[in-house]
Length: 134
Image (cartoon, rainbow, N blue to C red; front, side, top):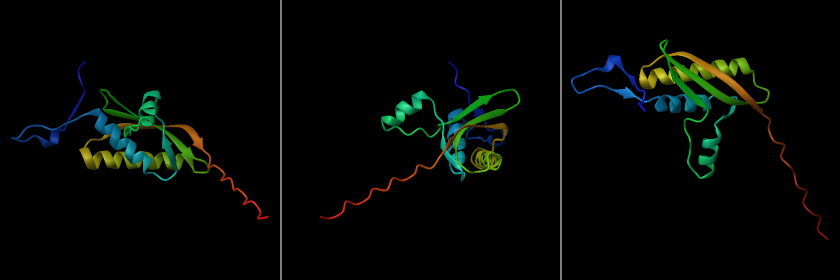
């Protein structure tokens, strides 16, 4: 099994080359998307759910990176808060990921696809009445 990496063409020097693993791009995209207001959480798969129950934090949760001839394709799976404008929040997620990726790796994504897989409703807080003193 060969591991796919990205080579940063701009930074060749006498010291060597810089390679970036797709997992790094997943982490950058996941953190950038989580920071957007209106995003309730990122959607992971069954394995990340089990790992988180055992205390392992998954920073690449809800992000899939694919390498193609056209470039880097990033798919982001999010659960949004109820009442937000989904198109505006999705655009903000794309902008945050694009900016974070450019700042940290100097790479550009050919596409950033946002999949809204759920809506998070705020749970109503149950107010317990204090028992009356006798």
